[in-house]
Length: 223
Image (cartoon, rainbow, N blue to C red; front, side):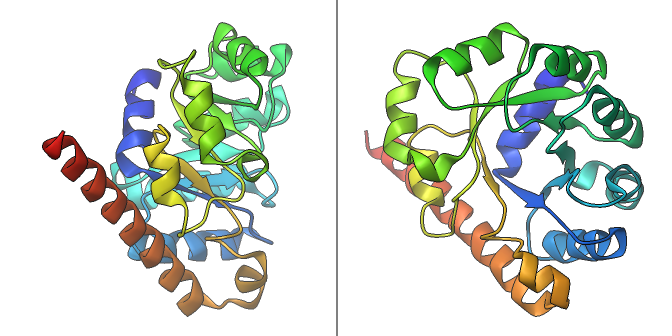
């Protein structure tokens, strides 16, 4: 899949689960539960031990049924390993020229982290297909709305502080998708294997996404 098509798929799934698991077995179980709960965007972070192996197994299990990527990519070696394992997109928390080059060389779609207009512009200049607004909780949806005024063509994916309660606000502000970490994949629940809690939150996020998109479509029909 071409990088531009991957970003289209990220937009289509709407919610990307940012998964930080304590071990590979827990990560794979969490992916199974998330998918069962209606979440089809999965970002396995390099905070997870054995992240490339998890990505490879998840890709084998689900194929095109999910949009699978790697997060917290901090080194060129991680970028290559994730892409080789089957990651369709790579996400870095910030923007580094050297790292961006390696991420682009991998052939995967690249999402670089940024917060200020200058950082966003630099990320785009380096070849980012989309920009991860991080930490999103520090600025809020109104900031994204203002940021999009001079940068309307940039696909933004806010991450950090995204919750069921504010998914609609982020989408209304212009996000193409949102990254949901601890609010969706609680570290405590993963460590304790509380899968019922995880599937409940997955369903809540999926429902919030559906409601937000229905509301946006309705407003467009009425305008």
